Amino acid sequence: MDEQSVIKAINEYLAKWPSLKISDFYAGITDDYKRRLFDEHNLEQTGIWIACPCDSKETAKKIEKICINSGMQGDTGGGNEESVWIYCYAITKNSIEHT
Image (cartoon, rainbow, N blue to C red):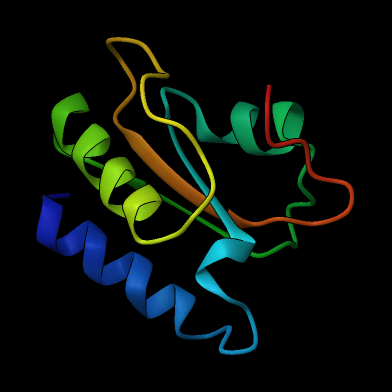
């Protein structure tokens, strides 16, 4: 997906959770969102999360930076050359943010 489409998808998803603040979310990039979300961040598959494929790693990194600059938790500089997935999730008492 291109940058505009991914940002639109994320914004539409976040709008479904009006009781949550932007700072209640974590954003990152990865090459395997299922591993990252469910194994490493310890999320439930039924939790509040979104993952979108980007058309390049550069696009994923740019959107990650936008998310973090908007107030989401996270850090830039992660991922590898295959990291074209951007993901965001609502932080829970069981989630692990720094993996």
